[in-house]
Length: 305
Length: 170
Image 1 (cartoon, rainbow over the protein chains, first blue to last red):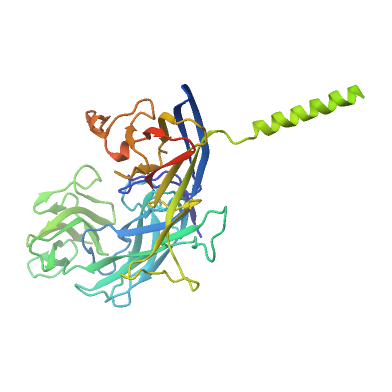
Image 2 (cartoon, rainbow over the protein chains, first blue to last red):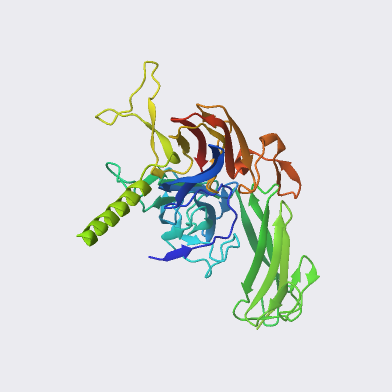
């Protein structure tokens, strides 16, 4: 079990700060008066009460819309915000829950905390946790990080929750004089995030043009490979970003230096400032963003050995 | 014999002085805090009046939940044979408390003033200003009050006056 104490949280709070539990509130009055022609002043007794403990936690899903995912994708993130509206540092247990009405079940769901407070899930940085000590009025960002199964179909959704439950119970039974009681306003809260499998997806096709008179391959024959990348499904207005291509050179062939192209533009072979390179085994092209009905083409030549 | 008599007189005098010192003062004041609770029957159910409304009562506040209202009652007792005049009672308002507007009451004629500078000066609400986050002066609101002052014309001999006001625990 990972256990993390957070004294000062990263984000401001939307809520007014309540008086901390166990705070003693005193009141001493003073009076100035005239009696028998003589001015006097006295002070009263001290009237005191102590502030009870209040348990009050709230968790909210932060993504504005279902998080679009694709089948077999890894580390897909749902974002939540947990706030301790209570008036003491509360020990809160966090549990992942999957809504059984979903179309598919995410794989390896794990709750992480936004350890570096940047609002974004950072693999290897944002710690896994199941319990958190959250200061009064503090809040923190949490993530559910899951993999999407290969059999998730287009437009399928998965509903996935974080259940936050205070480990502090309400004071039971009769009033206990001289002891602070605990009142539970909201001891358990649950927020549900949604993954939705995109109704559009990356499509690719690879073709080969053999440069020989008989359209057969012989030693020394040049083959031009073309890899066509586009968006399938409901592509209108959609984009797929950060598309990267890796294609290994077929056995028995040799890459032709300087032949790598992206949409007709030459790319140099070294791994330098442009979008492509050949590493001796495969070509690598940072295709970037593919939008709507526009396709991108990667070409390169090999010679049959 | 004379020595013993002198010693007895000295002890008696001391006891008298102690007794005198412990006598109730002629004028004194107390402060008490109260909070409202539902009246319950023996089974723990909230009692209701004939209109179906829950019955509440004020009880001494020893433990309070944030967001709840606390009523303070100042009791000024004048056991002297003279009338107490020109009385001014001041109560600080703890930073964890918010004054409830128009909640000051008394069974005597009183005038009420408030302070936004921890009791250094008092005035009526229409004359109180506070510095806003925009660095401009704005009319003070009840949440800005941090002390309250009551002026009582007189407390007749052998009588008492009660003053109450309400605050909300942040």
